[in-house]
Image 1 (cartoon, rainbow, N blue to C red):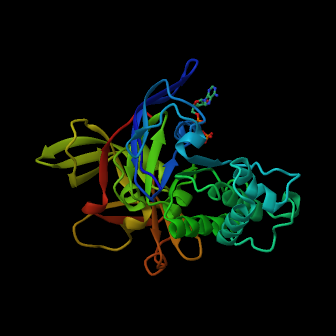
Image 2: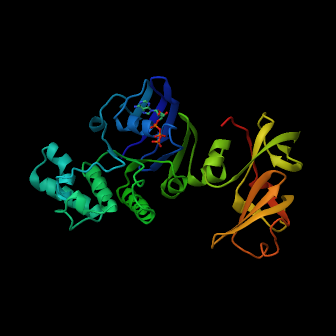
Image 3: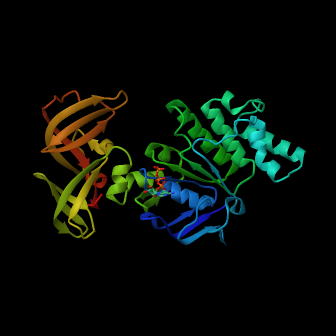
Length: 354
Ligand code: ATP
């Protein structure tokens, strides 16, 4: 178990600046996720922490040690690859034992450790199978057992669920979490799937074109995004371009189309803003401390356990999500609708050039 610190890490590939000087701290025993769209620099960061690639400048520390230019094995990092990279000609047992044999451990010790690792990933009994005789989920368990058997200080997982079907993805997601908690090991996880990141992580770093936009718990990131990019990347949300038209202390009035929203909290200088409203925070009935906007119903979509009402406010589409159909029943396509939103549930953020 280890804590990891990146300080001002820069990495370029020819003309491409993959990492523009990122700093991060991963704590002892936490499951830390790098989340972001394709090409934002997640894998590059992971490879630099794994010791498979080295930065142009900046420092990587494990606890108090500078490991920037150490190899993976010198720094005690093990990466599980997306495609598992199992040896097809070796049995499950031999795949897991391989790293220990290289270390020339005594046979009995190898046997004890392999049994421990296979039990941990719940594969006891499949020791003699070959990778082709295993399901995708089982292959992944072998890859994780093989990584953990050498007792790394940090386990790195690069999009580990991307080759699995939807059901297995959920199962393996819980398994990875269980194993991580059981061992208390530090895990760095990479994904572009925000739901997966939210479900599995202690903390998340949201990345965007070679920078870290925000680090926080899933709840922080979802409920208090600090930038437009983070807000719009974290699930379905309403991000409405608007202009600050009046300021009173830390409260502002903003306008979009012909609508005006008063009494919102905003302290930045920039007048070009976005108003961020989560669909589930919009009510279809009057509530206290609310701003209200009236428009037309564009669509009503039934998803089973919730219903979405898409309203048009001028040319702006705003989605409301509710679990009760009480107020939806009164709505008609193209009919009038009023959305009520608690002022404290409305975020105003500076507009970014995304
Ligand atoms: P993905 O989710 O698609 O894997 P990512 O967020 O992991 O993306 P990286 O693989 O870290 O992103 O890539 C960051 C940037 O660096 C991209 O613009 C990519 O094209 C570039 N890049 C990465 N590796 C190399 C390389 N070996 N040679 C040249 N450019 C590279």
